[in-house]
Length: 544
Image 1 (cartoon, rainbow, N blue to C red):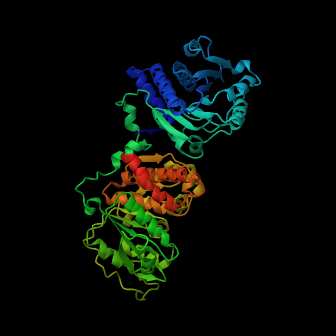
Image 2 (cartoon, rainbow, N blue to C red; image 1 turned 180 degrees about the vertical axis):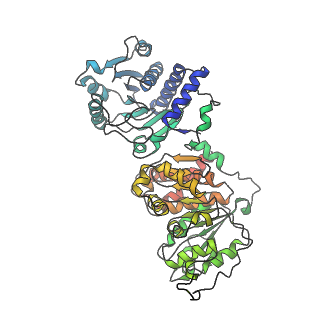
């Protein structure tokens, strides 16, 4: 499971390792060897095995030179272009020379003509210019050289592999220099740096891989790291077992309270997603008029038909849901997809969570209440884990101190606009501090926050945080959020804890988006239903 670290945390890990006896030189050797292995595995069978390394003066340059040495041993034609000076007697340069590699120097190439000639002659380009200490804007003369490289990369289209991080990315903030060129793959060392998984840096990474550089696992600095980047193994460990003697009750019951006449499909997307991730039974609680349209497309569901007001969930539907919960069979509940923002549905949510609603409060002193209090006793309710999504979040925000009345820890799944409604912050501020905002409010509210978008953040009240480093327009389509909410609910129904259910649900959903785009051959044509139907493919991959 890759850790997610700040630059300071990464330096502390390396320093403690060096003091322990696994030295910086050892780390560089492991990093370069691991980098070479990734390059060889990725491109050894699909290219002419020609590689050009852009070598800076720091550790990234050293990692690149070690990798070139190993690649030369494995039959690659290698060239190192020294963007910044390195000593003539640098032993790493000697290793490349001894393998027949060419060494070119920027200081002897003022117009970068040698570099311009070298680029089209090599199919793979290692970007080892700048590492985790870079802070844009870049200074001259490096800025001009990298601008030229960026232009030539766009023209010649080599297969770019970033060494640790694309050069010019701020590894704490995610800011990107204008001269930074995107990678097809980024091979990072030991841990993922926090800036890399935040926009705009995330869009420059390509596929992300992590190399083990031998850091001891008992270093004290590891204890201060509570952020992670989930991978396939992490998700596999979260998924519940599926014993052969199981029955539907083994995998729980998801109650999906969703839908209105204007947003009928939201209930279907969420309910089927809950089934697709393994829930044993899914009950759709929807306004009565939706049943005829939905029953034929999801015959596997059972139904709880709710009182409605012109096709939207009515306030008194809260009594129906409460009575259903009192039966004790529901193991997870989703609120919100397709609700709409009508006042009667707002009153439904208030009544469900608090037992009363604003419609039941006197409008003037001495006036009687307009409706009777809830007839359904709330005593004896054992609240299942809850997911709140979409319009449910906006309606929730209208309840005073909603985080106190919402049984928890619940899972909240806002996009930046919904997060703005919940927090009062602007979307610009939220997007500029995605991880920090999610963490701060998870702690404040006592609920798991899933801040959706490129690099979706999952933050738990106890300080654990995960970021799924996927950015794809395949998921920029109406309804994909309903699929995510349903997937998380389906995992909760199987008794996966809230943080882990959110983490796994986000990972599965993101990779289902990627799989759908690959199957269709374009991100433009991916619909929410395509993402939904790709969930089995991704689950199959994870389960092995």
